[in-house]
Length: 128
Image (cartoon, rainbow, N blue to C red; front, side, top):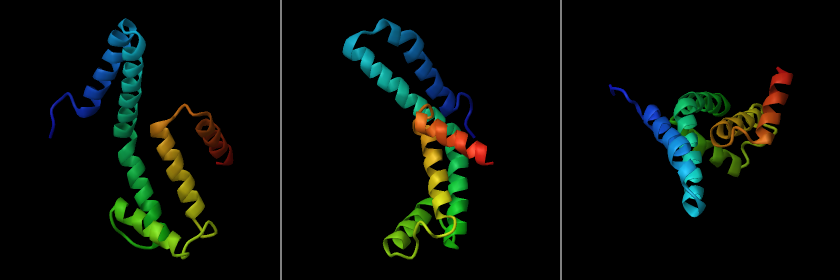
């Protein structure tokens, strides 16, 4: 067991320091690199918060789609093998939905303000 602060708290503290204290005092190239660092730390924060549940959901979708078990990496390799081999296609029940959900999960971590992601979420909510 880890005592406080945990990794997510440390990442947040560093991002907030860069964003609120360091960045306003920087100019030019240093300010640019600080903004890049702030964005990278924000991605890490989201991955720490969302990643475990996203990975579990992806693994369950793959287990159902492939009819087998394994680690997430193993199941993704099997999916790729079956796609390359022609055993699966976009017409395979559940594949398009799996790919859509996996893409939305990645965007939630990498680019949650991306307009295409926001529209996809709105469409998904409207369809529900």
